[in-house]
Image 1 (cartoon, rainbow, N blue to C red):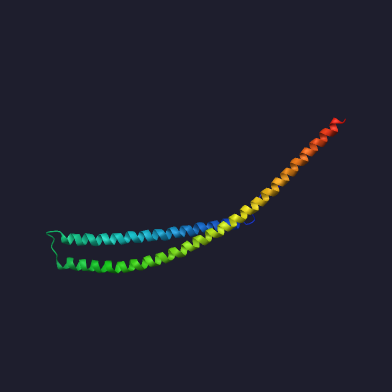
Image 2: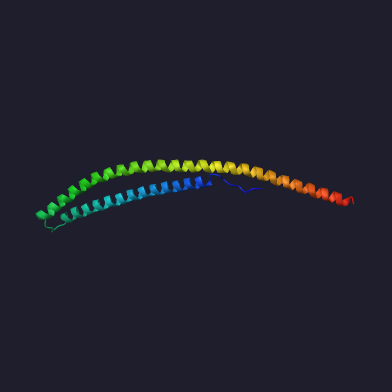
Length: 151
């Protein structure tokens, strides 16, 4: 009786590692996306604070303050365009990485099915061999008892 050995075990381990790395890369892209959302919210909140600050009664609106507000509005407009482009790029990367994860998991699944089939075949052969050994043992004991009983 030999123990079960899957010849492609190292390949399966490698494919599992690749699948894990692909999932980690997808998680990293999602983290990048969350950072982008946080940065976007921070800029929007900063702009709202500035707009609320100039609306408060008793606040003097000097030329430098108005100029700073105009610059802030221009910056946020440019930032919105940049954010839109970054969202498009992150969505593209995320879709590509999802496809890579699916492919890596498919390859792992194929090897796992092959291993399961080979293990099932091995188990059948193992059980047959065990049955043969049990039958041989029974016959040997029966023969030994019958030869001892006739003496």
